[in-house]
Amino acid sequence: MAGSSAVPATGSSAASFPYRLVATDLDGTLLREDFTVSGRTREALAAVTAAGAAHIIVTGRGVPWTRHILDDLGYEGLAVCGQGAQVYHAGERRLLTSVTLDRQLARLALAKTEAETGPLALAASRDGLDGEVVIGPGYQVLDRELPALFVDDLTELWAEPLNKVYIQHPELDDDALAQAARATVGGLVDVVMAGAGVVEILPLGLNKATGLSLAARRLGVTAADTIAFGDMPNDIPMFAWAGHGVAMANAHEELKAVADEITASNEDDGIAVVLEKLLLG
Image (cartoon, rainbow, N blue to C red; front, side, top):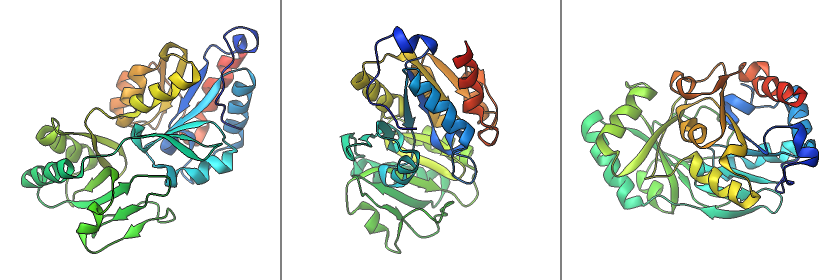
């Protein structure tokens, strides 16, 4: 199932599938809970690309935390990583675009947030193809298999250019933390809840739709040509941009509320369920 970076003109083989671009989130959407992609979903995506559409992964993970998944899928096209900050060409293994977070602004936003919420545990994603995720004291990493740099000195978080900062709170849940931070610093940075234990501070105006629109333009595809799959509030801008948004059964209620369709869960091949029906016409 190789990601395609070339989309044929509508007509001919593309006529058997109503969209020219299939955009899928990773965690909670394309990936099952064991971080694998099922055989059924691989086959459905292969059939879609054979019908003339392109598959593009759009994930909050930075490139270093995404590359091994792309390699496993035999993916050679474009991928949108880092919550829209990075457009990555998997086949050429190079970044086409990369947006960084102003570190001075991020530190100001964190100080203002902590004045409202109390101390936060922090981590940060460094820019670049091999940018490390730097984990500060007390920050809980859900997948310990992913490469990370654990530090005791928080000044290490700010030593190199960053794409984003992760925040956690000892008492507030993810939704409450994101809401509190957004209410406090929403005019300085963007704040998004991207998954369990994952609240992120991003450059103002950056989201998945930003990166996806850049990638789609390179492919010569429009928003109306796109069907998107996701599970978390960080997928809301992508749904707003795409012609059709499909939420997984396991999705956050905020995303379900704006979805055009709800499919089965990531554990039950929700992406394949929708694609198979579309392929049948």
